[in-house]
Image 1 (cartoon, one colour):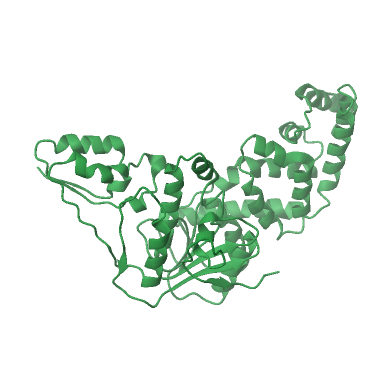
Image 2 (image 1 turned 120 degrees about the vertical axis):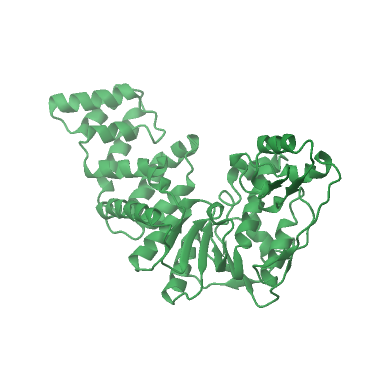
Length: 417
């Protein structure tokens, strides 16, 4: 006879239709939700049901709950001004029942990597309160995990995954580096030869492998031989390819990766829509290793460590929690640090493109995602602003852009070398 719907903003359209059928006769429906916190569009969430409530059910009574019992006034003010820029929402003015006394800052760094060193400094100095480091994608945590592990910093992972270690970009890079250590490995060669947009054909690569085996000729020498049967420019490209791979294993891993980028891998990855932003994260890890072998070993170690942390995620033993924003919905922390709030990640590249096309739905959800991250903080909120990156969301929050309403002041972090 009576139906209560909680978290209505995350309920799907089909589920709302079922609910409507269930209460058709009685009209006894109590629905609780907040469209500003609807962040599960990829699961079919239908926050529009909250707007439609007054038209679907008889004699509707709507009450706004506008008191935040978690966050200080400073954080609530940041959240209010930020989410109010979403056009499709029910107007609300949240107030804090805690009052003032919190901190809301942007921390300025030169590049993405300095975010992680800043957080490492904070962790080294000791953290006494519950602290969350939040990000859009699990990938963003990997360089920080690398630094925390190197410095024996205790941390917990909240409902993470280890898909970073199986993504196409990392798989390609590691296969290329492994081949540089074993230039006669024909399996690896067949996996990498075509990934530089040099347009080597498969027959050329297969013949190189076949004749290398039968004639006992080094694989890359035979690859150059086979290139002479192709178009006139194939030989020059093959020689460039061969020279690069013969030198690769002698370089520091970050320089080796940059050589692969210069060889043309980025163009290939962009063409395949692989998500080249992962290259930044890979380079960050590589920057801490002296040899290609060490780098490959480090990746294996990090993958095993992430798996270990995932299996232990239900038993957090640290004041520091690393979490995606989606995974921490409903949680709260004394202090929150939001990293990688940059265009292409948060907001996502797809949502930015849709907004340009005046299709605002996904872009609005990205803003709601940032809003959820902001409102996890009880006392202290810190968002990184990265000078080398563009960020529409962070630009709205900083004081040095007079074209936008300023929400809070910028706290500058000296450049970390």
